[in-house]
Image (cartoon, rainbow, N blue to C red; front, side, top):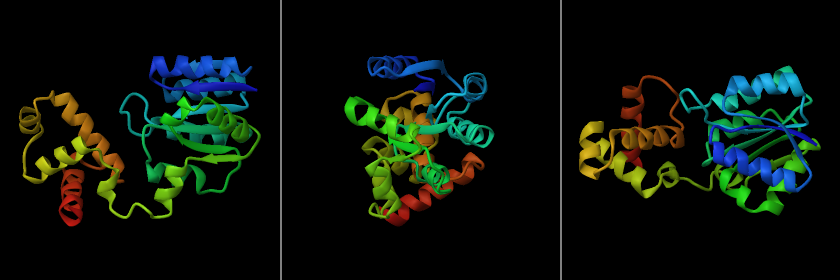
Length: 213
C-alpha cells in the first residue's frame, strides 16, 4: 500500500508515518497543506490519502476541501480524514455521498495502533471506517450542541454571552488573545456555524448558548 499524509503538525505527521512503516505501509509523501496534498496525489497516485481537516492558512476546512477535490480528480484514491473532534458538517459532506473508500476518525484513535491500521487497510481496500463518536452525533444522540464544547470553551462562550470582547475574555481568564481566538474558532466549528462574518457567527453562538444552557 502507498500512502500520502497531509497534516500540518510535524510531530503527528512523523508519528503516523513511523506507525505505518512499522506495518509495512509506504508513505510516498508527507505534506502540511491542501495544495501539497493535491500535488502529492497527482504525482504519486497513492492508494490512500490520510488528511487532517484543518490546515493552513485559515485552519478551517482546507484539508477536507483538498481531500474532496482529490477524490474528484482521482476517484481511485481512498481518503481517511483525521479530525481533532467531531465536525458533523464535514463528516456528512465526506461520507454522505455514499462513496467507497472513505473514512473519518478522531485523531485520538491513532493511539490504538491495531484499530487505526485496520481502518487504514479497510479504507484503502474500498471500504469505510467511521468513528463511533461521529456515528453517535449523526444519529442525534448528542441533542444539546453545547455538549460538544470543552469546559473552557463553554466558559468562553458564557463570557461572550455577557457581551465581553475577546480582549476582556483574555484578561478575565488570564490567557492570551490568541488562545481566546482559538477557543472561539473551535466553538464556531463545533456548533456548525458556517463561515460568514465573525460578528454574525458570534451572535448565533450566543443565541445557541442562551437557548440550551
